[in-house]
Length: 185
Image 1 (tube, rainbow, N blue to C red):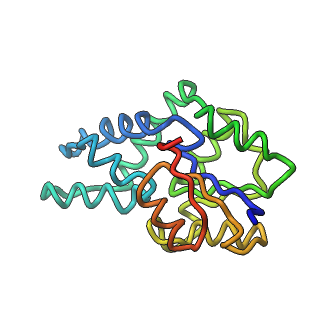
Image 2: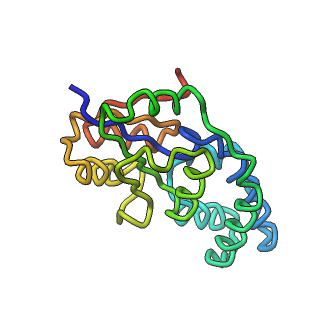
């Protein structure tokens, strides 16, 4: 029996993936690093602190990650007012408010996840929000979902995850949780 719903943020609750890609693309230009859009999306759900250095290394480039991250966040926040809800997923969260425990479990940074949830006006719907700062290991490792379940005091097998990326789907599977691939809805 499902007792809790766990939602990824980017690409699941919030239509933000192109905004993230565009912001990273602009930020990396100053370091002469190119960013392939499809390769970026394949790694959706994996923290940028792991993915962006990998892209730089593949191109044989040195990366000042902290500088790139600061530039990326600046570019992303400049366009945050353009972000919108993903209606069919937000509708599920809205219809279960007060009925099931709910959490956001994201590979994103706390600042950006919170800003996005406020932008789409759902911040107060969730009992807890787990971000990349809250776990040592990240998707496809199950830690972000297991931490959300722990905070909600719900066993993993009683959680349903909503995800849009392969790393997150794999993380949910490894956590022993039911998972809905929102791309198939």
